[in-house]
Image (cartoon, rainbow, N blue to C red; front, side):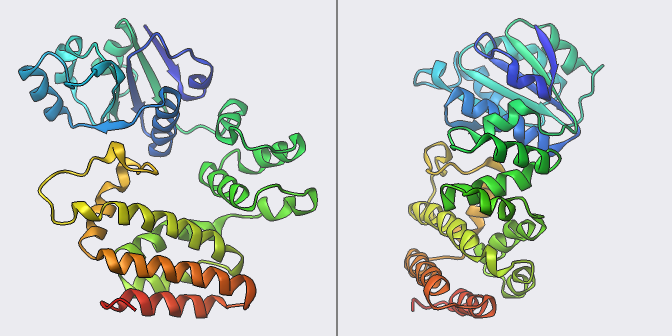
Amino acid sequence: MAKINFPSLFQTPLNKFNHFFIFGNDAAVFERAISFLQKQFSLPLHIKGETELLNSSSSQLSLFKEDPALSLTLVPHITDKIIHHLDQFREGVFIFTSEKARATSKLVTHFTSASQSLAIAAYASPLTTSEFEFMVGEINLPESFKRFLLKTYQDDYMGLLSSLQKIKLFGEVPEAHYGSFLEDQSSLEGFTPLREAIFLREPKKITEFFSLLTSADLIIFLRGLSRSFLTLFELIPYKNAQQKIPWQQVTPPVFFKDYPLFESALLRWKGEEIQSFLETLLVLEHKIKYASLTLPQVSQSLLTKIVSRETI
């Protein structure tokens, strides 16, 4: 029986709750809360719509046939009608969300007063020390460097994610190189739209978004792109298949908001094309390191590969 603001989530014992309700108006904080909860419970995340959840509850006692106590289910965009059915979902852990609910709404009132429920207010929130330590996790960083990172990215969650990814790829960071991880990360904002354009084989957008990268970002971007295409290759058996993709079994995990992107990409890439593209990414990284391949040359190589419908 509780309601907390998002920053308090990192100090709140979670084991006594099995219903979490996230409400508010900041989409980024919603994602931060969901990510934290999933990692804390160390369970694959199932996504169900409210209607699907209610229909399944009316036909069976539990949501899952196989040990429902070990399930984690996200139910986004719920409405008041779910309130009278929540007692049916005692097994497993559920994350409910609503971007329309506010502090005085019926949903917030119910989840605040219900036993084993925790309501989480997701409004704009700078990074706290607790969230920062959670994000850093087991990365071994000097305390002085961690203080610099927190100060630099306290109001830039995505910027910190990008820097931590870069640190993981580069390994140990000597003090002399701190500055390269504390620079403005605006250029990294182009990674997501560029990746999406490559996934969807859209040459004009690829050319446009490539202009947002710098030469220093190339290896980071190519490695991230390789991971995405490895995931896409794993999904090839579901291309044009009748069965749904078992997202909870995909490794590395795909965030639920990226499901439509991967499904669209499957329609545009063949398995052999993905394999050939992955080989190209490895060759390009090698040439960047040892042959001083330039940004325009990398862009042209990728475009040539993407617009071709033949395996090179």
